[in-house]
Image (cartoon, rainbow, N blue to C red; front, side, top):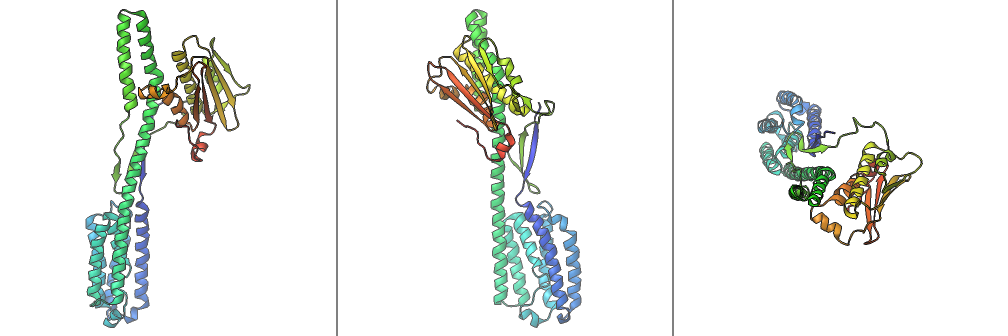
Length: 414
């Protein structure tokens, strides 16, 4: 079934932009409220009214632009900060000198912090330092002297904006790192899936051609030799990696973009649960015995298919390593929460360290076709072997893969 690319957007700063949008509206209303409560004390109230008309129109008109980083261009940020600075510098013209000396608020009041925070979210702590420094200079000019409360407010805005800008930069770096890790994990899973499919098909055929060619001799031997060379090359490719890890891209408006292969659903296959017994029945034969429960063993279609494929891979190993005359037994156990399938043979067993050596040589039948499949299902695969006494492979698959995955169930990674 074809797989499709799944695009996921990750943005830790997008909620910050939305919060800034709300902050600008609330602080605009707060500034207007301060003016309304002290309207009769203004020396030139018409200047304040004219400024607030501009402030309200600007704030409401620019709400869509402040909702994300893409809309906050350098030109927009400069204009926004100019509105804030103009309000601060117009305060001595609108208000009385005595109220200014007594610590009265500027016309934009705390709305100014919104402009500085936009610089911090857009460009990090350096942009925040620049904007807050300009605001500090305007406040000192408006006050006429560096009074304690003015210096206190200036330092507070300066430190807070720089801290927020630094946090934003760290969050962006962490976002990119996480997106990169997710893409590596997705690429690794897809590589293992392809490797399993290749092992179950192409590599098995190449190995069979090599063995049969050596037996037949002549031109068939040369064909077998070439098949063996291609098998080694393909195993090297499989073990080295089939799927290149894509580079994580970053959209300033939406955050990091993660592209991964999306696992297909079961559309086109059985709509409901599948009886595992029907998938294992074809394996039974003269030298393979199947023992199963009397009742259906129902599993999701994907789980049942992968479990049956793992059983097939185990039987392939029996035929390849124990010989065509070896006998094998398949035992199916239907537990309340999981299904256990045991594959046992009467072959010579596996020597100590042989599995690790085979994996190092690129022979990943047990590592990928068996353990890899069960790990992806949230289950486990245990292999027990004693030289001279045969081999037993125990496969455990949960009946509810999604529930096991959400609850944190871990597969056997040995």
